[in-house]
Length: 375
Image 1 (cartoon, helix red, strand yellow):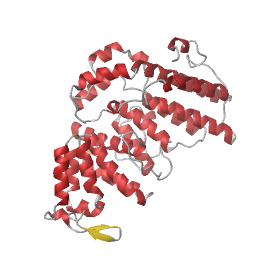
Image 2: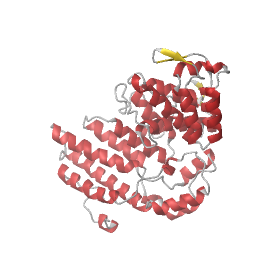
Image 3: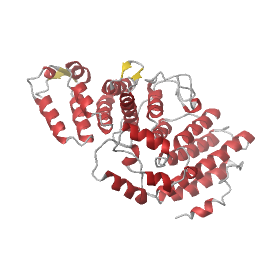
Image 4: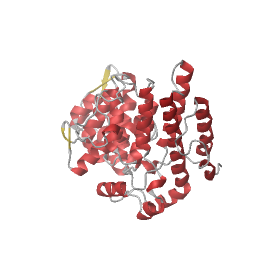
């Protein structure tokens, strides 16, 4: 392991240096040695609604197990190094002229984004209050707030957006993996709206017309630099830490937050499942062959957000059964499973398997048709 005290004497630690590109590359390699010594970040940092026994004690155990302080320090050191890169760009010491330099800068910044995305939730009273108002069973303890000072940590989400500004300034592409890193960082900070906006920016627009200008530099809007300039194919790989499910989870949590706060979305009263599944369909415009994975990911995201009941109501509608096909049944059951509702998942299975309900009408699938009973 690297001695953290050595970092305080590193040339990048105060964020004032103006290095060359190769110096920055060697520095990030050194910092990544510390990252490689840490266990992977857990799902708990995404603040899922999946019920867990003795949750408070488990969270305290995780704080020790995943070396939270070391991750805070690593994140802060990487942010200082990125600031040095900004200084060097301003001085002309680093440019993106030439394909090799552009590739090296993009790779360096991608590594910084990865570290930011793996930084733990910030122990601030602001987020403690925000989380308690949303879900009394999912919050950091006062002891955590007292033990780790605010000055010891930075906002990983803001740090990600700073990287996006650098990429834009150098006229370098913002890749889907970059968005995924920023989305995860935003979720760690309970920034559901920002996380959802980042994901939706890749597939043609956002769901909110919030005119709040606070922190406007860090908020996506339709004309902002974060817009990728068109639809971006989303990797259909399933998994809780994959870009697809992270993005849809952010959309689901944003809609749940609106419900909790009594807010309406741009299209009226918040209807989480409708919005999440329509987002999945929007992705099919670029990748029609991946429709099944997109629909399954939507169900998993709703379940992780605690919206299994809303998902069941949506999935058992005859209109939606026809629109989404057999995969909507699996998505509904997956939502129940993700919310630790095995009995409800079994009931959903029996419901879709039965041929007596109106939702068992003919489903169009692969050029033919089948009924719910046959599936």
